[in-house]
Length: 274
Image (cartoon, rainbow, N blue to C red; front, side, top):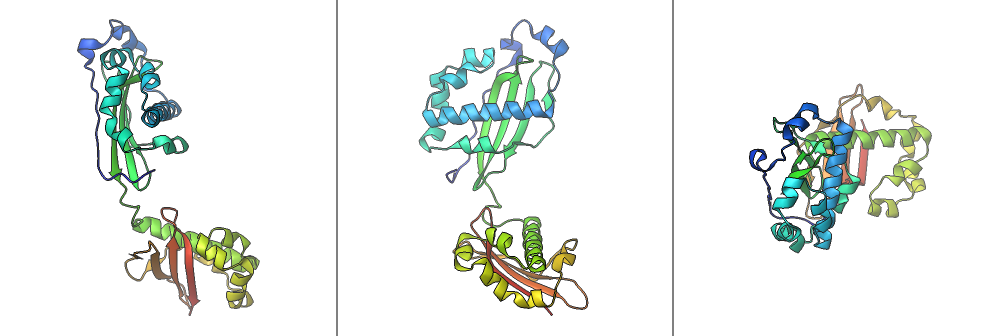
């Protein structure tokens, strides 16, 4: 997904009292909030069709799937004009097809039988927020759409919680490599520069002293790392994290560097037990 430097909100609101069909009362008697799997399906289908319309610049198919009040009020060309900024910026939202949406609020069903789903996709470098309304139970056709694109603060610097998870995962994989005397799996998870510069056999050679001492670092798995200072991110997007585990009688110290954001793959490893 290309970086997006601004936020844009497009909101269509259709007032139930003025445009909902006469059968509204009958619908309300049976309408209920669909299960989570159906909610997920609705969101994915809507965002997939929306992404396709943006990519092709053709909203005819997207328009054909709207709820009748929405469809009759807004024609395909009008939708294309409203979303022209998305088209001009060549925003490729098809990446959302491989992700699961996350709801920010509990789904609601109002007195007019309108289902509202509010959430986001945790994408980088920008987060895609949405508020979607559906009508015409049980088909649940789109009645309103709001989409916002905002910078993801974790694209530059992952949260402290995420950094702790990264350190724990790295230390766990390293411990397994030492215990098994085989760095093949550990090597497969490295960043490309690190992986290409050091073969598994080279890593085993570097850490042979850990193997010789039969140092079992899996005891660190249930422990939380203690950071020495704030993590740093240099001009080359290399993230450095240093700290230790409060072990006795020896303290396990580490200094890890990560690269290839937002996946943050290991770029350098230093481990000392002293």
